[in-house]
Amino acid sequence: MAKIPDATITRLVRYLRALERMEEAGAVRTSSEELARATGVTAFQVRKDLAYFGSYGTRGVGYTVPVLRRELRQILGLGRKWRLIIVGMGRLGQALADYPGLAEGYELVAGFDVDPGIIGRRVGPVTVRPLEELEATVRDEHVDVALLAVPEGQAQAVAERLVRAGVRGLLNFAPVVLSLPEEVAVENVDFMAGLSRLGFFMLNPRWREEMMG
Amino acid sequence: MAKIPDATITRLVRYLRALERMEEAGAVRTSSEELARATGVTAFQVRKDLAYFGSYGTRGVGYTVPVLRRELRQILGLGRKWRLIIVGMGRLGQALADYPGLAEGYELVAGFDVDPGIIGRRVGPVTVRPLEELEATVRDEHVDVALLAVPEGQAQAVAERLVRAGVRGLLNFAPVVLSLPEEVAVENVDFMAGLSRLGFFMLNPRWREEMMG
DNA sequence: GGCTGTGAACTTATTCACAGCT
DNA sequence: AGCTGTGAATAAGTTCACAGCC
Image 1 (cartoon, chains in turn green, blue, red, orange):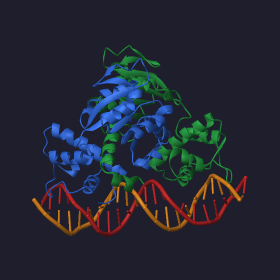
Image 2 (cartoon, chains in turn purple, red, cyan, blue; image 1 turned 60 degrees about the horizontal axis):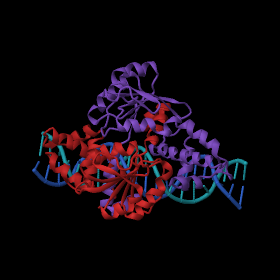
Image 3 (cartoon, each protein chain N blue to C red; image 1 turned 180 degrees about the horizontal axis):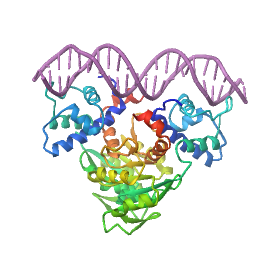
Image 4 (spheres, each protein chain N blue to C red; image 1 turned 90 degrees about the vertical axis):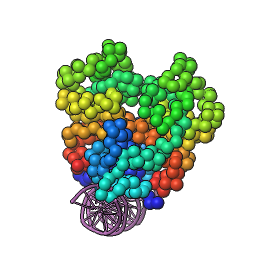
């Protein structure tokens, strides 16, 4: 099994989303061409990305929507329901808890905060627990992943607690680079970085053309 | 001026954040080595990234924190205050409106929603306006950028309205690939994509090693 | 001596052309 | 004939070694 570009995984997520829309619309058959149009990449890229993992289509025909969808869910680890907690139940944490897409692929186990005004409140499918219960919950409820929605200053410390408690994956919303052991998977969702990139591209349309085609 | 890797811009944002922390801590002088440690990249990379834009350091000495900070702010378009609106003032939109980091570099002009239960409510520095006022506001208040925090199904339509009204940059929080004219800068903040990547890495630690070192 | 700035080597990722099935 | 799967070519991005300057 070859080395897979990081960007390929990101695109896989998009293909899956496109396939889900197609299946909802009742489509059974699709092609690299159609997937490419739906996701804004080239057909070459679609085929190459899929080929890293196997052969899911039929030459001369195309792909079967539900089959490819199932395979992609498998590859992306959505075959099983990951058990998930949210740490930091401010407005962002609450927005995340409510997010409908979470339900497929993830099971929200609990939310945590330090603010007594929020603890005990019911948000989406969970009741907010005090941060002290973090370790016990991770252990007893077999938590796999944590969404980290705490203020910047606390992110590193809380992340370390989570890892020590046994969490294997971390989605970090704070604008800091967490330093954690290699074996923990970390993804960052940093919207301020996105905003700053916007500023750059708006200021430098010329570079934008060169860079993004 | 050479072609600048997309990833370089993202790293520039991190360097800037590190510099701001250093300046707060009273540091005056730094080095590529220190910036590298603070942001989790190599010192080579730091120097290369900066070199795309100019020479901001002194050989044998290093960089002057406030100087480099100012230059980076300039490059990233934070030299001026972009005028910004938030479309979709649900929990996510509200969380964004409250975000303290927005204040530096951006001026939040207004928030919009269709829900009569939210319209008129004061959130952070703005009062929520009805979506009908979108075009007039963009025009009259000279809005540069919009944060798009509406449900997936409405993202494309609202984005088109925004572009037609004259918005030049768009930060999209919906998990869809927007198709818009080339000249509009678009950045996506898709946390579900991040979650799916986590799933993949947790499922395939072997690949993760190969991929991320 | 020390640290930046940069051309050259290398590594990774994307594009392409076409062979291989159906 | 048509569309996938893939090795080879090209392009992009990162690492490195060292020249240049303080």
